[in-house]
Picture 1 (spheres, rainbow, N blue to C red):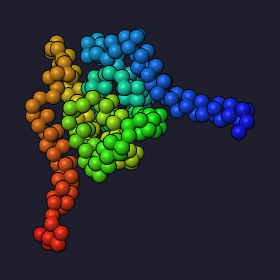
Picture 2 (picture 1 turned 135 degrees about the vertical axis):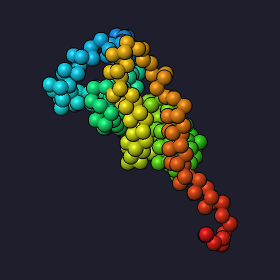
Picture 3 (picture 1 turned 45 degrees about the horizontal axis):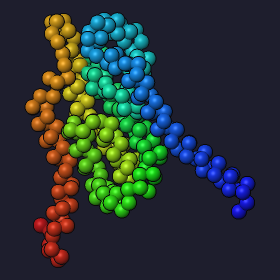
Length: 252
């Protein structure tokens, strides 16, 4: 192979590498800019309290356009893994009501999470597989066997950050279809709870009371979400029981 051909191949490989990592660079730059510019100050209930009448007037005048703007902003928050998703979910319930707030948020969060999943799988998945070795393959086999159930559990119970649950399946070889369906279904209960709370936030503001997210997830709500998560594990338990049967044992 001539020197010219080697340089051409090297240039092509370099171009592919830049193209592969460009989405990650954009996401990290967006997150860094968010932190550097202190844009998190706009995700606060005090700010919502201050401007709520103006926002509600805009919703009344431009309902459809306002819904599209909310969905677009929420997609950006999820895709760039920005803090403030919970505040936006409550705000969505306050602005659009529990039902429409839930629908808009679930749609936006699913789209944003799927975009992040695709970026992570395309840009980082191959590199991680090359460096991780056979242990990652074993994890993939175990996870993919019951991917839908495990993802539903992770979505239903807010034990881990939303961005982490968005990224982990991309590294474990979960299919796009399974990921999208589990995300769409799994976030509905929690989203509805936050949206329902947001729908009643006006009375809290009118009474001059303070509001924090810490008081949202009560023991009853967490118990209900855990119960739903346990139900989603029934297929996993069934498979375990089936595997544990002795050869030739008749099914009941």
